[in-house]
Image (cartoon, rainbow, N blue to C red; front, side, top):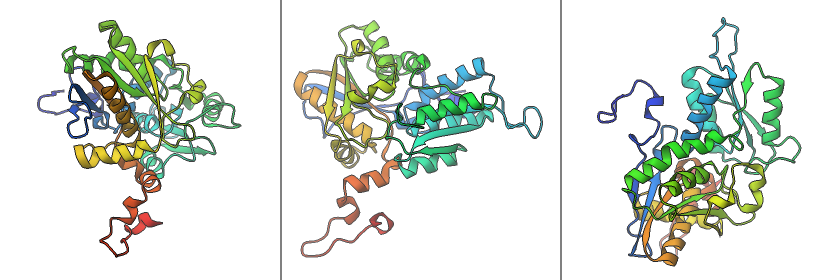
Length: 343
């Protein structure tokens, strides 16, 4: 592979690391505090469009080494192969499906019904089978056949066909960020980073970043952003929902900011229109956290992890910002709806 010419033998060579980092882009017009530099780390620049490519590549590698994955047809035309089953709110499933497909492994994603339609379609495009359950936005235990419980059941009952990495308990989720995201940020900021702002989900990102960056400089502040209760921001959790993951370690986090989840959508729209950053709702919420930190601390260099972009959330934006659907009408005229989005 050659990162200078950007010529690769396969998609795995495009995965990010210290020599091939995702970009940092400075926030300019929307930065509320001149003495505080804010950068967005654009994780939608990963091959499958989200920060979850990092964890997925580590999880898949582990499953290959320990669980004997095999491509379809490996033992003859009737061999269905052995692949991955995983509960997901969309992004990890998409990353796993894309990477598994390159290797020829089958993939089954178990996901809540409330996951946006766009993500479900992308999972199917990537070759994944879907098991859709009536569950919360974020998979959670104790809810009958919830996403995690169903994935476990499938992995046990069909152990010759599927292995379950379990991103909510697997330390390789943390390790991926200790070995890629953290070193990238340290190098990109020449060690001048003072704050990192990210979200709470599986907590692999925040835990891995904290372990790496605080080993470099224990004064770096690790800020986690959580949506308010009743949210529908896919992939994120507030503190009351963290029982689902064993990767959450409160001692690794300096501050948890709970933010009105509606701001996930309005801030994301501002980032797109005023900074040219096509931020998804989780990035919008993280940006609001960055604004709060900048106004509070006045000086520093903060890096915000922008997990994915807006394109998988069109219907969510239409729900939370109906004015986008209606358009902006001239005075005394009715707005013209945007076709099918009106439905």
